Amino acid sequence: MKVVILAGGFGTRLGELTDVIPKPMVTIGDRPILWHIMNHYAKFGYNEFVLALGYKASLVKDYFLNIGTTDSDFTISLDTGSLVWHKRAGVNWKVTLIDTGLESMTGGRLGRLKEFLGDQTFMLTYGDGLSNVNIRDLVNSHKRAKKLVTVTTVHPAARFGELEITNNEVISFQEKPQTTQGWINGGYFVMEPAFLDFIDSDSTILEKEPLEQAARDRQLNAFHHEGFWQCMDSLKDRNLLNNLWNSGDAPWK
Image 1: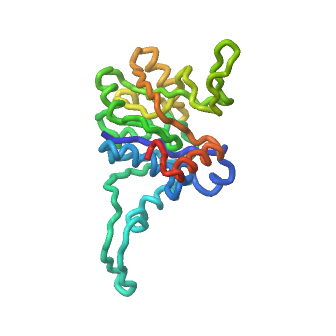
Image 2 (image 1 turned 90 degrees about the horizontal axis):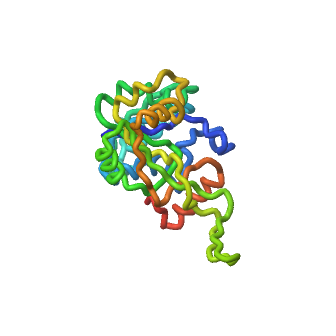
Image 3 (image 1 turned 90 degrees about the vertical axis):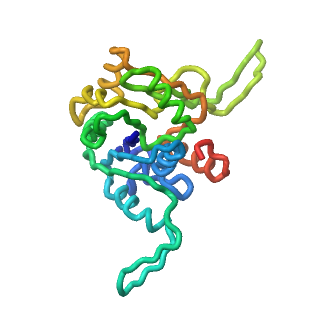
């Protein structure tokens, strides 16, 4: 099953970082967040990816063109150009990189990938969020539901600290945790190819007409994820993810 990653947005809320590189290439530790997302899928045996590129697409392409050498040890003879490999990169991913347009919306980017996805079920996520969602359980939920789309739902992070109060006594204080109330779209979709028929043009927003239509048709299944989930919408989010990674206890590791 192929994994589509929407990796073409501008990421303007990350300030100067995305003036130079696209949002999915912003690093967590010493790797782009895109690599962390892909590595999570690969842990469950899904290692064929289709990347929907846009803003600064060439930098993402360059990264994957060079990852085989930057992650490997080798001897090169500069007079002949011959290479002797000592340690090859440890990933066996197949990555298709498609420029889906600078101004395309999320649905439009997915629509441009139709010829690369064929007639098989595929997965899709965004290039700016990390989670420890169990991909195996997600796929099984989709198979059981027999619907066009399954969306992973998550609890959002609280904007402010959350207090649990009983009889005017605070019994729990958490500074901006994930809330226990309400569900939001956490990405990590599973989709049937027929869903692509809901996409009209490059200007289609995935989260508007296509998913709203799927919901009206009773073709949208929810997979509830109670564990870790964090999007990288700001520098503060990036610092949080970096701190988790550098601690050695990152939930998605």
